[in-house]
Image (cartoon, rainbow, N blue to C red; front, top):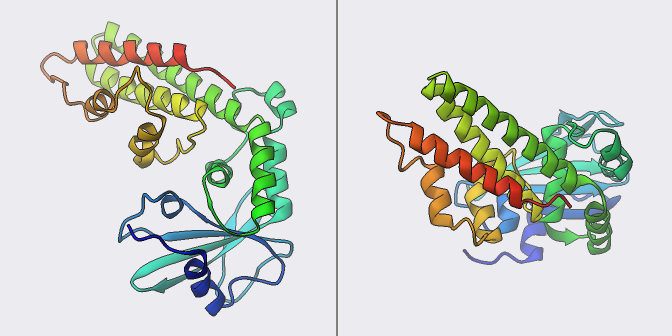
Length: 261
């Protein structure tokens, strides 16, 4: 895929006056930032400002912060949809406060972030910086020093354990259909815990799990084996128990190998 320069990213935004005077940083996030985008992918941009953004064309998006929402602008260029989301610097500060170590001690496996908040913080770790390099560097440092990663890993491990227990109980009762679904759910959470422990966030977007696994490349879980289980290649509907047991055994192995930061 052809490399896009910073100026090429910024030009459509500046032409539409979407970079305000109070801009502290601008960053490309999501698949475009990581080179995973395709011709149908949206371009997602976060703009960090010191003042609120509100125009006749902006769309409010609720978030449980103060103020209780962010605004986004959308436009199309060359057949591609762009979405520009405006975050206040103070809102990012609030997100970082939600993942403090004090919060982790109170609720190590609690859902302290909404999915949107979690995705947004995780994207800062893997964004493409257009403006505000110093701002991004400092927030990445603070994010790395926070309990964000530990909160996600513990959450995913607990979800994997819960799903595995469901699968075992359902298997023992002869309900192989539910056991199959529970085993699949346990596998997804276990792999997410592994990826999160390596700084690859995005469990709310499982479509990118294969990409994230290729980056981490754990030796004990080759991509070929992961993909065979993810796609249920060896599943036999007439005798699903071996597949279920294999998946649950691997989930246990993964969870035992995952280290909470």
